[in-house]
Image (cartoon, rainbow over all chains, first blue to last red; front, side, top):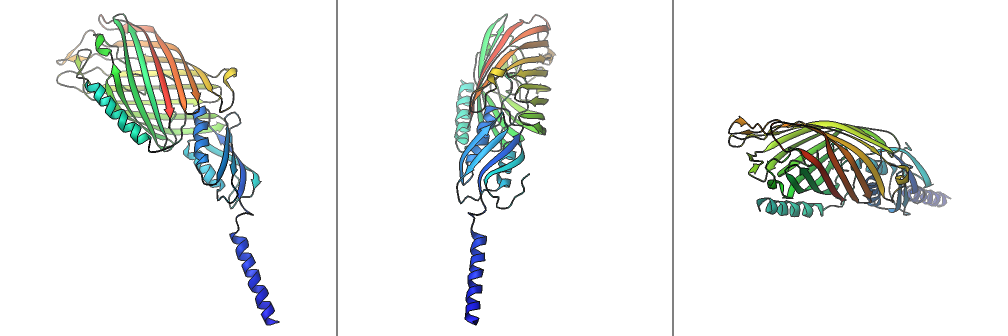
Length: 111
Length: 285
């Protein structure tokens, strides 16, 4: 009986441990980032290029007229919303609302 | 010869350093006037400029190169230098900068553009202000018969950019130091520009991005000095106005503009300016 409880407890600890480590259940897969202040084609080109440089990014589509960047991410990526916003800032623009179209944030605020 | 060797060396060095990074681009403004856009952090850009000036005395041209680097998203370092010039063809070359951000005719000019205020109230719109400071080293001994020394330049500009309307206004002051007993006169200048993107050109990225500007430049050069005496046939004031066109496609940009004098009040018997035109090719690395 005692051995059974120890076995079950060990199994439970392992399960919890692996659940905490597993990123698949908490990663961004597709994000729409709203950007204020971006007005020209080279702005969009620069934004697209720098977002694509992040590890785990599959595809980026920037819209000047909508003021958005849609970022498709690879499974297993570790990209956070704050990293995306920081890249927007380094390009000289203002990041606004972030909409998660697919996936879940690792740990980030939405605004 | 001295200018060409210097230009080739500087161009090689800057292209080498530009090739070391693969950065972002930020934006671009008018052809002749002061503007606020700065490069993104770690971004590089190259502007190659051809400028033609037509005066009563004859026509001249000059080519310059400007390499820009974004130290951060609001602070840009640039180095601009002459590639070639035919300015010695005329005895009274108009006193101007080859575009407000591009430096004097034969000068090597390192500069800093600091965008100290920026506000983005909506999609595609920005209000911003910037300060521009530079130093200059001449590549030629004399300009218009006056021994030319090093100089400094400072300017301030504020403006607005959006997907449909643009405007910037600013002013600056260029001062050359004495060389021997000669000194080129100071050059205070003001610029204003209004831009518009016609509905036809409001397609979304990555389609080409075109806009039209009306630019105005006012220059108030002071008298030159030779052997510590003011030169009678130098200095005056001039107001120019004209259209320009900016085309942007991905990492390429092209600007073309022409200014015509609407008012000229030149001291002494200097040849009047008829027009100046400028072509700029830009590449964002």
